[in-house]
Length: 245
Image (cartoon, rainbow, N blue to C red; front, side, top):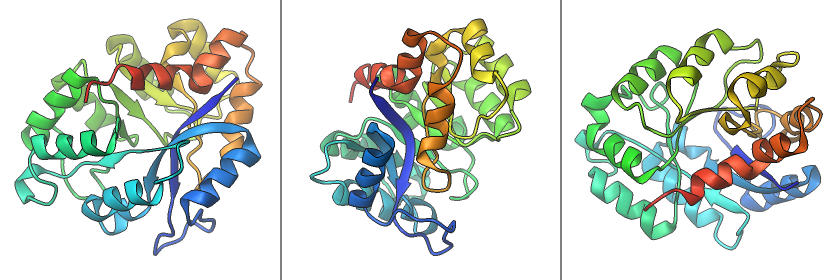
């Protein structure tokens, strides 16, 4: 079974979480230690210095590490920091970046059609996954505007956000959730039983969380091997194969 982490970071933030993975090489060593094959990654500076710095650092610092795959964070086109939707996508295409991220609270914007209409339309049409944190009111509004957007919610709470996201899973087939901090007793088993295994992606939340923790939870879930393989990496590989840059 080949594990593919959908949510891992590297780089040393100014406000350290207490455990940092400073470089791409250190992250690869962590993958090796935990038995993870690949990871979608971001650089810590996308939040503190902004995506206009962090996106470029991310692609530059993973060069020569084929197991790491960069993601790019968005900013409103109106401020001119990352250019138009077309320019942002052209940069993704140039660097082979197949997934986007949004940090609306940290980077101070509203993730909606007023702010990102042209870009969100392109992400939807091109099947580019967008990774976001668990602002469920914002996510509900976003999916109401862009119901076919491939959305992956990461970092949702360990106490269980099921009452938020299960109604959304029922309505929006393109919504997915990661496993990084999902620790509900038999929660994964129940999700697989009700919605199938295709909506869950293994994500570690590393370095804030231990990379192996979510892996162990998924590996020990009482589901069949095909479902485990889908969650471990098959679902993410399928989503990335569907991307049209």
